[in-house]
Image (cartoon, rainbow, N blue to C red; front, side, top):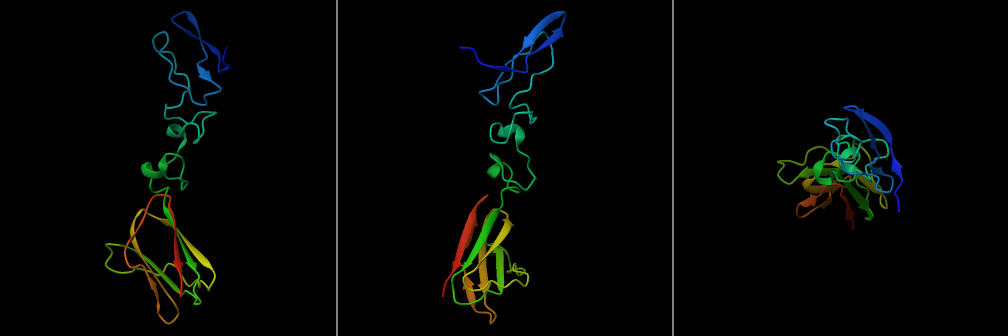
Length: 169
């Protein structure tokens, strides 16, 4: 049974005609062919650090992921944490509106700034906070009068994690 071959083209080297066609359509990504006739140009292949035509992040992640593009692609969860940040979803199932949300590192000396930026999260609503770097955090949410909710222990957020914090009465 023969396999379909792509990119068949004659290459000339040292006066000899060499036919290269080692990229199989069914594989998506091939393997690097052996050098031919002492230094002919390389044939495109998965693993050459170039995202070639026909290669995608799904079939050739080592060539087609881009660290720093704010998209968490296949293979980036540990290799590119800045693209694979966590998301905090604060679900307000209480009967109170939330006026302030503080998210701060477990080793931070203070709570830092209000993450809601004047947004009010009414009862029965939720609020999502994006781009949280992986790490240990405390969460603190307050009502208008300053009462509220606080995580009793630090919460470890992992790369690309969606963490839901539910507020109740």
